[in-house]
Image 1 (tube, rainbow, N blue to C red):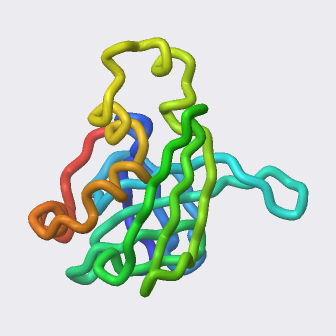
Image 2 (spheres, rainbow, N blue to C red; image 1 turned 60 degrees about the vertical axis):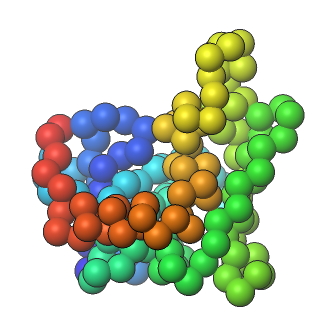
Length: 158
């Protein structure tokens, strides 16, 4: 698929069309979706740009995409490290070598979450797509279930 509809990880009721060859994403109305997408700010050449991370089903396989780069989930591992200040580091590894690396202020850096005594690992997964992937992507039951759900599309409402 060159274009695939994905649900926004961070905002309920928001959908995107991802061009899987370029990594460009644009908003769209509701529809059948095949995974999730997260947009976040970045910089390129001194200018602000929209960065995109997505996990989705396409052609009977699960994919992870970061901007214009994509990998089959079965072929990579994800590592998520959180430091005491709430800064997260997410790394995509292929054959033990880092092929993509991202540092960001995730939910653990949010002052509201930092002051909430009930904020825990489950909250972190629900709010952070990278943490979610790192914790679940090696579980064959998880990947089979997600693939079965997303491969034929999941109805979504805006």
